[in-house]
Image (cartoon, rainbow, N blue to C red; front, side, top):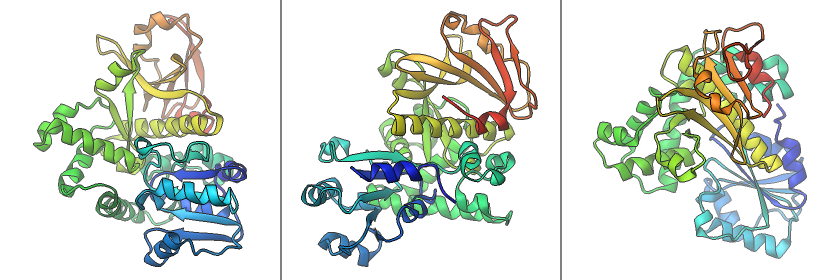
Amino acid sequence: MLRSLAPIIKSDLRNKIVLLSGPRQSGKTTLALSIDNSPEYLNYDVPEDRYTIINRSWRKDANLLIFDELHKMPKWKLYLKGIYDQRGHKPPILVTGSARLDIAKRAGDSLAGRHLALRMHPLTAKELCEVAPDLYSFEKLLNVGGFPEPYLSEDPDFAPRWRRSHLDLILRQDLIDLEQVREINQMSTLVLLLRKRVGSTVSLNSLATDLQVDFSTVKRWISILENLYIIFRVTPWSKNITRALTKAAKFYFYDNGQVLGDEGARYENLIACSLLREIHWEQDVKGREISLHFIRDREKTEIDFCVVENGKILQLIEAKWSDEKPSSAFKAFEYLKHSKLQATQVVGHQKTEKVTTRDYPFGVRVCSGPDWIRDLKL
């Protein structure tokens, strides 16, 4: 299956090193190998390939050089800088990794001006409808998630087995390779706690109490889980960025099948995943200063998601599994009525679309969730 990022990567490779990151087994390697007919693929996890990488003894006639998991190599950015400065961008270099490839920014800007970064997600409704519309199933995305292997499997028992081994592989291999963490079992418990709290604001102090560790430890563990593309954080919107980062956030899973909760929780996670994929696309491909948050007032009235660009709210999104009546939360944010924004309530079972203006500060569009995530635009 051709992925939406394929033409972007081909174009970017003409001039820069491309860093492609994303969750493990989301399809990065398959995509990388489809870019060219004669690539040289080297995986740093494989001893023979590691030797080839260190000694720079790959095929010199390769049309494309692919380094997988190179971020596990000490000073990997300096290594890439040396190759680029010596050979330019020939052959083109594509670096893929199952951890965030920007985590070493604090070590310096050795790749400044030499690379472009892209983030790949599991399959979303929008991407499926762009590349393989016959494969789009809202129910499957909701219950199985968008990772290609379980999503495309016809065996109903395969997904839970795959999910268990997938998470175990990340925590017991990738985690140890990147971080000096001994408390694997406690981190597994942290993941379990977060799986049960999708859609709710989460206090790190509360998690620290539950796990019987200090606040700084939980904060570090959360950061690791984010860096490994297991979870992502959605913060409350505030014009004061520092204040927003210190408030309780919400955490969602890249794998929708990880959510432990009712249909409403799984549905909200699916909406979050769909939004984040579009946010990352707009940031990486178009360079927009756009971000995802939720909005909450002092009375704790809340709207699930808001999309913000350059400090201005573009969209308010409320996710409801079955309630077609516009949420009363929209009324609480009347001060936004002069803003040019879209207010949308996406309903899992809604089959028709309507716009409500009466008793609301701005028109609220009520629409079908399956259709909305398929046609999502920011």
